[in-house]
Amino acid sequence: MIRIEKEYEEITSLVRSLGTRVVLYQQYISELLNVYSHDFTTIDILKETGPITAGELAQRVGLTTGSVTSLVDRLEKRGYVTRERHPRDRRKVIIVPHYEEKTEVQNVFSNLNENMLSLSAQYTEKELLIIKRFLNEATSVIENQIIRSHSEGDKK
Image 1 (cartoon, helix red, strand yellow):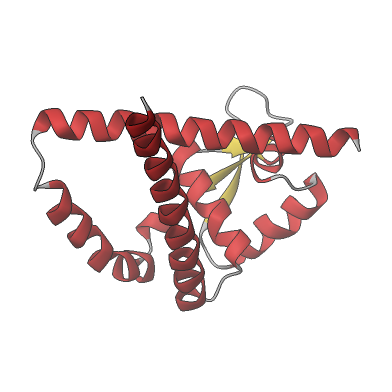
Image 2 (image 1 turned 30 degrees about the horizontal axis):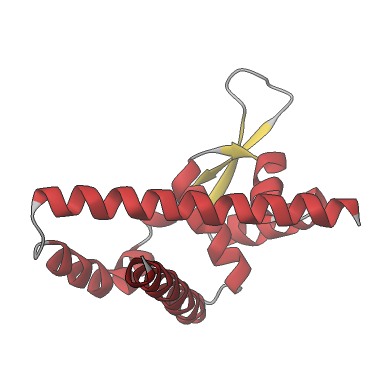
């Protein structure tokens, strides 16, 4: 039993270590693309969600709607997003990501993408399913922590 708990602790430590490396890599990419780190994080969130309203984006990144407006202004100026009318509610505006289409983004990620594809090729299909399941569930755990911390911050 103690051995398995040690394995759990090691996995937790490895996930934290991976998270740290991801943050450092995102900071590096932000510098290469000449955008703020938080702006880059927002771009990645939009990649995951697809088009969403500014209010939904503010909730996901933990900013006020006013701060998100400034952030979207910066990203729109760089061509990473556009604002479009909501298809079902013309009063709302949605933020539509376009950064994956940009050549400079494709260039800065090409090496990482190649290396991740090579790494993935080392695993069987069954192993990849387990890895994907773990990563999805770990992402959900972290997302829930973020949501909880934002709601606890609202109470203060």
